Length: 382
Image (tube, rainbow, N blue to C red; front, top):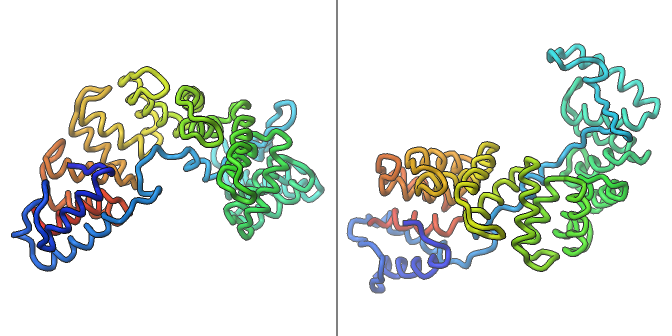
C-alpha cells in the first residue's frame, strides 16, 4: 500500500534494519528470495527514504505560481479599450498566410522605428513569439526596452519578464523588479501580480510577504485570475495574512470561474476536503475535471483517485488508472506511486509487479520518499 509521508521514516528504518539482519519489524516483508545485488540496491533506496524530508518532497497543493512562472503576455490593449495587433491591422492571420504576416510586420517595424511606443511593443511581441518574423528573444528585448523607456506599461512588464527569465538578456532579478514596479505603478495587473511574487519570494528585493499580498490584492481586484489564485493560496497557507480557509476558498473560486487552472484545482480539493466550504464531492470532482482537462498534474492525479474510489463520480477503476497514468506522464510522483499500487493489486488494470516497481523507481528518482521506500522494498524482495 502507499506509504504515507508521516510513516515513511519509521517504516523505512525498520525495513532497512531487517535487510541488515538487525531483527524484524511489523510490516517488513521476507528477504529470503532477494539476491545479493537486489538487497544492496534495495538498501540504498531505503536509506535514501530515511533521510529527513525537505519541503519540496512533501506533497502539498501546488502553488499557482507554477503557471505564473511561465509569464503572462499582455494583450496590447490601449487606453479606452482600443485593441491593436499586427494581424488585426492587416487582416492577416485569418487564413494563416505567412506572407501577409511578414508584410504586416515590415509595416509595423517601419512605424516602430519612427518612435511609436505601442508598435514598438508589438514588434517586440512578434520577435518574442515568431509572428511575421523569425523568433529572436534578444531583438524582442531591444524593442521592449525602447517602448518601456517611453513609459508603455505592457512593454515594461514584458521587459521585466525577460530579465526575470533571462530571455534575450542576462537574468537580472533586480532589473526585473525595477520594470515590474514601473508597470505596476501604472496599474498593470500582470505586473502587480509579479510584484507580489517578488516580495513573497524575495526576488530582486527583500522578502516582505505582507507587501506581496497587498500587490496580489491590487491585481486580484482588477480581475487577474492568477493573482486571485495566489491570494487564495496566501490566505490558505498564512503567507502575509492570517490563515483563513474561507477567504482562501473565495479567492480561489473567483480564479477558477475566470478559467485559472490552479484555482480550479484548488477549488476541487476544497470541495473534496470541506476546507473553507461545505464538502461536496460532486462539485469537487467537477472542478478537478476542468483542471485536469487543462493538464494540471495534481488535479489529474486526484481525479484518477476519485474514479478509483467512486468519490464524486461513478466508480470506474480502469478510467481511474488512465487518469493516474496521465498524471504520471505529467510528472506527478504521487500518481506514479498510486499507479504502482494499482499494478500491484490489479486495481483497474491487470496486475504486473515489474511495472509496479518501474512506477516506484520513477517516483524514487524524482526524490519521493514514498517512491524510494516502495522501490527499495521491491528490490529487496517480498
